[in-house]
Length: 172
View (cartoon, rainbow, N blue to C red):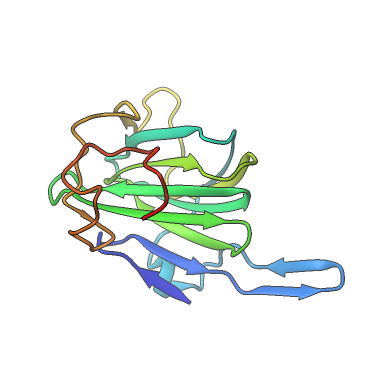
């Protein structure tokens, strides 16, 4: 099953998990998942391990890179922010319900490990990392200019109209 979000191109694809007495099997990404991948071609896979509460943000890629995140252990909040519309998408991905999160690189994006254990994430990208000329614009993780007016399509979220706080309590 695929879900689309209020920022164009941000999607989540729930993986089909096939459990048996040994554990489970799931396909992580297939080139024939056209409704999810479109014409994207994965050219590199990376692994990220983050301790609880660690924020890795904000950055973007302006040369067309698209990132696909798959959390293998723990839980991670993945956010994407559109500077023009000031819309933000917030997705929590977890090992308990495997999914692949697609983030077009032109959005400012970042992650925070929200589990009490470290997170282990594999992420696939559509452009090779260029060591001499990286496709990375960066901002501090607590940049006060990231002020969403809408979060996941909700303009009434109490976090709207304020600088984004990665540590805002998760209760309502």
